Length: 178
Image 1 (cartoon, rainbow, N blue to C red):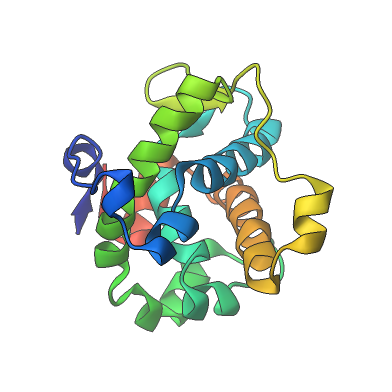
Image 2: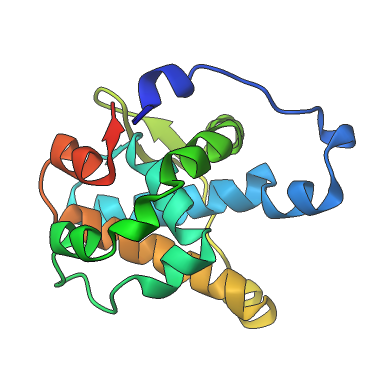
């Protein structure tokens, strides 16, 4: 089980110039920050008091992992709990993926806070800030199908989490401790 509170306070990224090009491109703070913005925007539309910070690593570990992303349901009407139970093989390695993504999520949160696209509000929730950090229509048209699908599934996960109960229940469903 991943303990997000501990993991969110640790840092261990290489300095930018020393990162492999593929890692720097895929996990750059602007891209991940825009995923955070889009997730938060969708979530905030349904719950104005903000997006729990703990949802971000789970959402990105799911949406960035091709095998898991491809098996997500087409509709948020599908029960999260039943889907996880029916697809429990996808939980294998999830904690490791979450822990591997945490440094990039932390970096993107710091970047986004600095850009003013998100802000902290009550407790550990995030809300949209004054600046926009969405993916433009041109970006969506010109990017790869995989990136488009990652963005789409990140938004889907925000809608799904909104409909799936309390924060503690959703974390427990994925096998994650706050």
